[in-house]
Image (cartoon, rainbow, N blue to C red):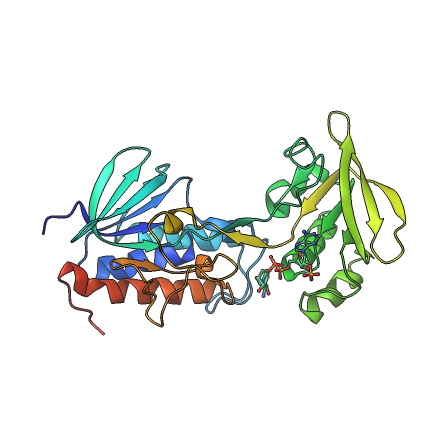
Length: 307
Ligand code: NAP
């Protein structure tokens, strides 16, 4: 069977890069498609301290290293978005913003996207004080006052990062207890992060730029205004599953792709790896899944798994 690529990997985050390395090293002709410049959400992590081999490394730096490594083994097709998939009898058809391809197997490493608050002003002020990435945009708020919305590890890590670059930070959380690791909560408090508990943002207000937040205390019903120059929304992620849905890949109740122990989906020749499959969503697990997905796809393209 003549394929344009034996293995097509959709998404150039940690899972996609690991899948690419394993594909090239197994002798499979592979391509990685990414609508952007690659790296995935890890590029937004101010620092990563739980990826073995690196005591502490910036998320961007780690992903640049992975990209360079993966590019040795697969064709990198950046700036090319996969817009649809088609299940064929003995292949998968891929349509992108730049062409169409006939491939032996597809590994979906499409990751997650930032969850939105869905309140008035959020869309209007996106890029004008509303941000979803402290590492990307924090610098613009130096010496100013911001709020971080959310109570998970990401929200607290972002709050600490913003404090450390000289920003006044309040974390607004809808409950009175964080979901984040305890050690992070302590570090945040030591760094002077303030917490506004049991509260939700009801509206983001301003003229040209964000000026204040309308906040409601969910316990007392009291509504107040908080003056801020910016708001960082860090309330978790949602799986990017539209390609999977289109070809009938089974999803769990939260929209994550269901896979077996070897990253197979219910659709022949379609595998998935990384955050789009849910679970603990860590860089190391994404890499492991990417590797497994490639290894289980090899027999479909006439290659023998070396393991
Ligand atoms: P997360 O753990 O799912 O936390 C999301 C937070 O947002 C929760 O506190 C949640 O509140 C809140 N939230 C959700 N929807 C909301 C809404 N509509 N309005 C207001 N608040 C809302 O997400 P995450 O922090 O992005 O972390 C994702 C995963 O990555 C987790 O497994 C986390 O442990 C992991 N992670 C690990 C590290 C690390 O260094 N080890 C760093 C970052 C992330 P409730 O608490 O009330 O549900």
